[in-house]
Length: 312
Figure 1 (spheres, rainbow, N blue to C red):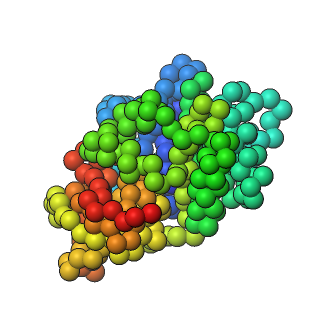
Figure 2: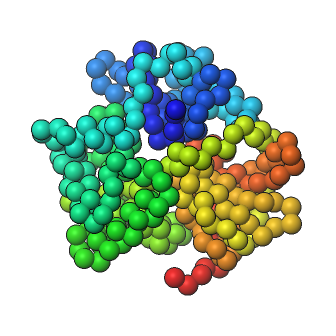
């Protein structure tokens, strides 16, 4: 089984990040993230990845009729290695010697474990998953199970209060904002992010908490794009706000929900808040309408922002 945040590798020296659970037409869906040049792995942007595949490996470019979206896909029989976050975390923890990034990850995991976290339900993604981390790499933890994820957020909040972890400083937030390249102002971005408690700092290194529900499988529901839309609405169910994709049920006569495929807007709003959303309106074969934010990886022109907040 393939899960979002897994990575897969091909014989040509390509590493793709999985973005959808399961397979479609015998292929794992994802985006090209790393290309091997000589003996080094080079990280690529989405635009570079699309251009590279179009020139060298057009068979990995894929149109998904289910998602009505263009992305990348690899036939299962062409995958030479499946990088799994849970397995990789255990490997790093059992190593006799860690580099500086792995040592910070180990310190973080032991700290969480001391506060009751079951590490068998967590994993590591990003550069650490495939062993291409650099001295300044972030740590991207993955939680498998909703209760584990929210437990970890609560532990993080408490450890920040105790001074064992730190909040991001202004420079950290600037770097995070620049990486996201989102359609919010810097002030708006930081306001939304601070209250999520899914980012913090250990030993001067930023880490992120991600949630994957292995048991949640949406099945094959086909959606057709109906055009761009901007709407103000009330959030009425935030149960799946931190899922991948994130989902917010809304109080609207015609549209049932907002769905975000970009982590920038994960956990963006809570029940009873009024948001402004700009995205792509989609309709299922059954007539259910939703607004998708993140129809492309960068989601330019698409956003979710709170315009009337709830007190916390």
